[in-house]
Structures are given as C-alpha cells and as structure tokens.
Length: 139
Ligand SMILES: [Zn+2]
Image (cartoon, rainbow, N blue to C red; front, top):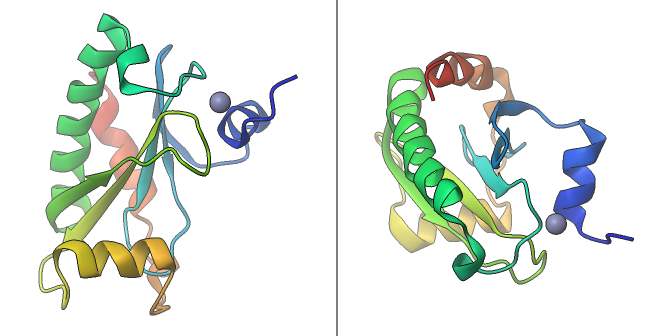
C-alpha cells in the first residue's frame, strides 16, 4: 500500500495536467499568490535526486526549458524560481514558481509569500494553464 500523497494524486487524475510522459508529470497548482505555479513530479516514487535515472535527468532539463519559455510568453514571467524540499511529501517533486515583471517582491520574500499562501488576489481569473499546454507539443 502506497501512502504517498503525490502517487495518490497522480492516480486520481483530478489535477490540471499541463504535460506528462512516462517519467514526469507537470501539473498546475491552484495558488492565490502565484500565477503559473507548477509542480513537476517524477512518475516513479523516488525520494532522492540520486535516484533519478538518465532518462529522467534528460527530460528534466528539457521540461524546465519549455516551462520557462512558455511562462514568459503566456503570462509574462520574468524569472522562473524552482525549489525542491521533499520533506513533507517524500516523493521527488519541484515547485516551479514564475515571478512576473513588476512584482513587488523578488527572491526569498516572494517564495516565502507563495509557499506560505499570503496575499490573496484574483489570479484564478487568468486562463494560463491552457496556453502553457500548447508549448509541450514537441517535448
Ligand atoms: Zn510517491
């Protein structure tokens, strides 16, 4: 029996999947603070960077490159922040958080607000996830 929250979510098919292949799943995160917030998760339940096989490593950088350029085009992202802690949920995953042009905060204060869920706005009004999907046709 697997008690991993990410494995369960992948099986449930209830999230907005932007892209997936045999090794990775890229999903939209509902966020009140960060437009374009994504999770990039391994399809396999692995817990450490050192568990990534060569194909997963290769795909990882391809996906990150597409995410960065797509977010820039679709929502005007200026920087793509990425963090991976894997403490609460021990399934290797990455938080991909775009910072928009003109954002009042940068760096760690921005990440802290996003991860802490501060400063609610009406970001859900923007349909960014559908626009992002079109960038993964050739990955
Ligand atoms: Zn898992």
